[in-house]
Image 1 (cartoon, helix red, strand yellow):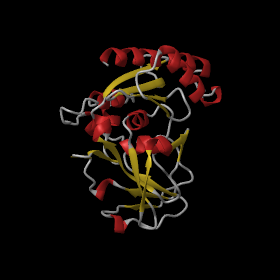
Image 2 (cartoon, helix red, strand yellow):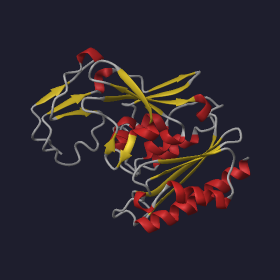
Image 3 (spheres, helix red, strand yellow):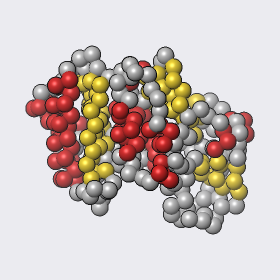
Image 4 (cartoon, helix red, strand yellow):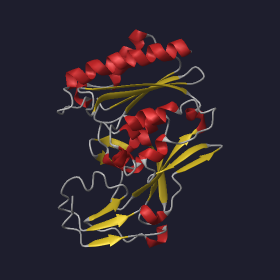
Length: 272
């Protein structure tokens, strides 16, 4: 879709080239949502394509994912054999249910910053203890867990002029065993519930997304019993937190959250 209100496009190559943020600005990465509908409040796009950030950086401390890394690049990542969480990357990318054109344009950072409940990059990053690096307009940066970054539907912790630079996944989380469950009302529909479980050296974590207005992460010292897990879900997710839209009613999302959580618990309990 043409954005008829745009009067200027910035193309920075390094941080010093970033223009002073002003009302009517928008960061442009993949643009798969930005160009999908009218944006009457926008006047300038700041295109990040030439910033030259490496899509993926593998190191002893873990994996850094650039905000501009595409889903196609993430799904094709060749990760160290010791990182048992590797299958989760492809599973979460496929949960987007986009065409190859979308996969090759949509970015990890864009998916996070859109903060749609069904955004699968939130499930991946929260499930693997991801931490956001955010550039501030004053030239500094701040870091925060991805679990605190997404606040609600299309609402994040970004302040005016701030830019999501990267998501860091620690090696310890990447070595954990994982389990994935996702369900939609239709075979090619948007996720109505998307859950990720991880199992480390005796500790168990469950991340709930898509069925809730924001990601919900629960941690346990070991694999919980069925009753303990159900009680934790009840306490962590009040009825008002379950999302309501045409992709699923809250009561159905709640039912599927409990059902899929129990399946994850069973799978990882058997692995333990």
